[in-house]
Length: 123
Image 1 (cartoon, rainbow, N blue to C red):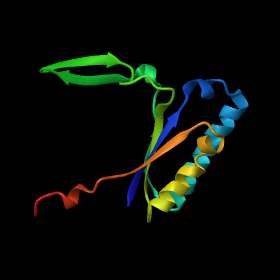
Image 2: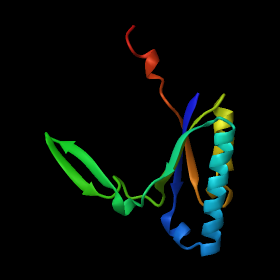
Image 3: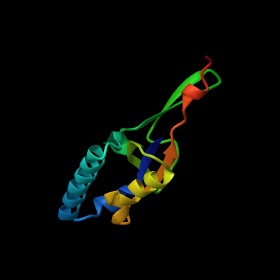
């Protein structure tokens, strides 16, 4: 089963970390990524640029509008993701709990299964 591990982070908390801690955290993320690559559970994953680079697209009454930044104000922002393929939800939750930002009590991880569209497609 495929799951998205969506990493939500408070940007100001990361900015406040000492450089040595940030460097170690980056190292830990690389090690985590290699671990799930080696286990065969990794499909994809990347950090995202900051919210100052985001553009939100909406359409209302036939008109497209563009807004700088994310759709909603929030204390935590989507900072990255992993797409994994694991045997069950329990393993996906286990992988989420192993993320370095979770262990440092900085990040929240939303674990969400991918929808299987093949089951919805007409034969």
